[in-house]
Length: 198
Image (cartoon, rainbow, N blue to C red; front, side):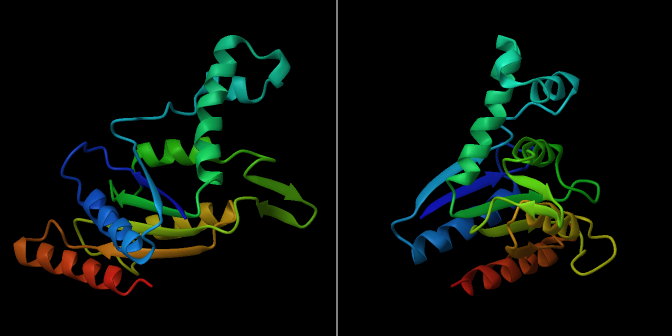
């Protein structure tokens, strides 16, 4: 089993979302000792944003790309290949201003490519990244689960599903900035959800 863990926090060290993601991965490795784990830290290994130069490269036929354009597309190609080779995806996702970190959005922009990871048909969009299991480790300062203020879960369900990844489990560590007792309870709740993974 190939397991890919994406740490999306802007923090290099001490990120709560990374801690929860690490705990998810540790649980999965305990269940599947033969798992091969790859960790990509988007804080220490950031991906370039989708800007006009990147769009120009992507929309230029491969045989007509400049060396710079080919190199830019190759960066996205590498992330797509890594995702395609993965059986299990673990995302460590903090909440920043009610949304996902720009680091994760940049990764998503890189792996969403028409006719490679999704395509449009007469019946609508079809995700081409199928057969993956996804775990999303969420870390929030407040309490947002199942409230209108939680924009992360609907967005991630939508974009992952768009790519064909519909088997998604969310792990919640919440209330982490609401005092020591609330933080301890938030981590305990996440630990209970992780322990129940089978």
